[in-house]
Image (cartoon, rainbow, N blue to C red; front, side, top):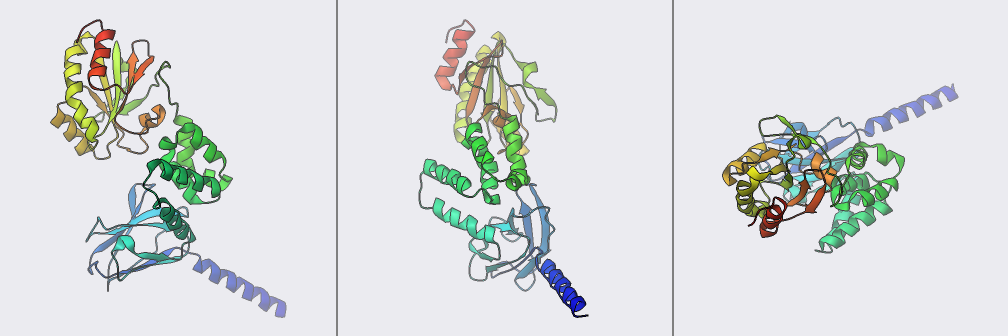
Length: 336
């Protein structure tokens, strides 16, 4: 009988622990009015995964998340720009914004959240871009069991480059390699080719502004400029008048432009095309960080471009202005 009671007690304790180990987020805010909607946005899924009504300056989420830890953004309909990134864990979390804006609120209950903010604090000790990148890599190397490491890799993979990303990925434990962020990294490693000048171009298909799929290989001309840009890229937009002039002058002789936008917003992409009067081919998958062509070609920043000859060989990279025009003129046997 005593043994049975002991086993029942253990079972009850296990059930209690299991009940406790379930995600919830309880929060309060002094400046989000009652009746406002609080949202949780999943960066990986790129969608809102839950919403609740704020009552008595408080809210509570009991969201079902497929995998923990998970990075989400919390914001409200009252002030969408005031958002707070949070690392969710499968346990009760609390958020206190009773004295602060939401973005600087305090979150308790998540060890991943605590580690992430310690890392952010370390990054804030320098304004150097290169040093910050080195600190991110160092974090991944020293935390092979942390989902934050896999997330850092998934977010910075193109900037790190294929070789460095592969080395850092190989250093992660198996669980991290196989989680949702690890899958993003492994897909990148399988896709990234990063051809160099003198090597053959990499073919791909992407949709244009009407939704029609365009394949690069089907639009190669004597000379083709594979151009990477976006509507929000000031240097890209500043270069467009020069490129339009060159295109109009040499298009009939065999010069083509195949432009890949890294925009997220289709309307802004289309608006920039119309505003700048860009007459060439345009494609995008509306994925600024995981753009397929950007990954394939190892484009770390924009503007960037690849000049491809009629044999499919990349003959130059990142030509701009007068240098691009002179190169096109020389290749097509004209003068500028």
